[in-house]
Structure formats: structure tokens, C-alpha cells
Image (cartoon, rainbow, N blue to C red; front, side, top):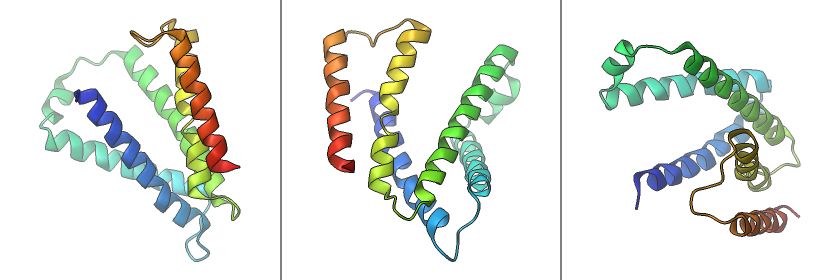
Length: 151
């Protein structure tokens, strides 16, 4: 299995796992706090995680001596801002008593469709070696799966 596939699976597992404490702190009667503070503290956790990763992989020295390209910093910061907005929307969705982790996360994980669509439009690229028909069929299957979980 390719490294990118392993990291993709790990990302799916960790994103799925992160929904459980988000639901707990956003909806538990004794722990409930405003969504904005939950986002702030989860962002702090992400920063700590990034620092631990850099130290554990011994890449911290490389980060300190990299020639910083301002365009890259702005694009990465913009991606972080958009991702934070997505996290805030997940926290808000999970804070409603009638929501469930399985329903919210099933809908949230349709992000693949949006990433694919925006990638095709903005980057003018289709996934390598994949036909338009297979992409369309996969998108339909994903929506059917979300429908089966949520309704």
C-alpha cells in the first residue's frame, strides 16, 4: 500500500475519532461551552500536535532554516482559516440535541465531493487515471450512502 493511502486512512480514522469528544463537549450539559471556545481549544490541540510531530520526526531544524515563501504562507493560512470554519460548523452541528455523530459526520464527509469539484474547477485537474464516468458514479454512490445513514 502506498504511503499516501496509509496517511489517508489514518486521517479518516483520526477525523472520525475527533468527532466523539467534539460532540461530548458541545452537547454535554455539564461541559457545554460556546462553539467558538471549543474551536479555540481544539486549534490549540492541533498546534501542539503539529509541534510534537515536527519534534518526533526531527524536522524541526528543517522548518527553522526553510526560506519562507510569503505566497505559500498566505495560501496555507487561508486553507487553515477555511478548515477552522469547517470545524466550527461541525461543532455547531454536533451541539444540537437532535444531531448524532453518525449523521453529522456522514454529511460532513461529503467534503470529498466538494474537494473534487473545486479541484476540477479551480485547478483544472481531474484525478489521474480516472474517467469522468467513474468519478460521477462514485459521487452518486457516496450520496446514496449518506442518504442511507441519515434518512
